[in-house]
Image (cartoon, rainbow, N blue to C red; front, top):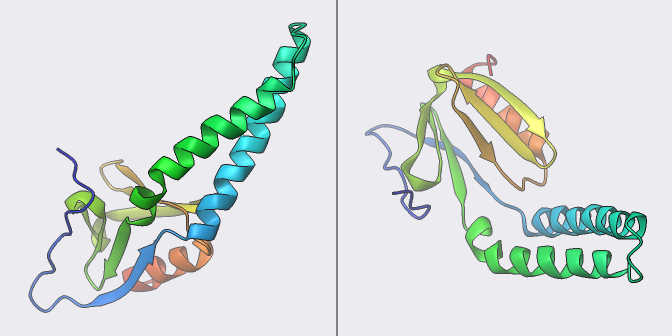
Length: 144
């Protein structure tokens, strides 16, 4: 079972290079943007279908996404990825050896890391995703 609070222990002699925590401002901006886009879409659909209250789409989107975002905020902001000189350790005991990383890419405010086996992981809600990618690449020796 996945438990995001489980931290992967470091090996003997392993050193922490950086910790990547979700940024509160980025989390809120992402949810506001999602609510705006979903609200516009819902309002347009309701208007197209002839609903006499198309404004309900934007209200419902803001309420739904706002409540969900508020409910999950403490959990999402509590997730931390730790970059060491040997691995990238994620929430729930995930451990990706740097030698197994094949690619990193920016996806909005997240960084996606891809392993040799094809597993994909997101380091979400980063204020500066390019900086995260650069730190990983530097730790890997420029090959990420």
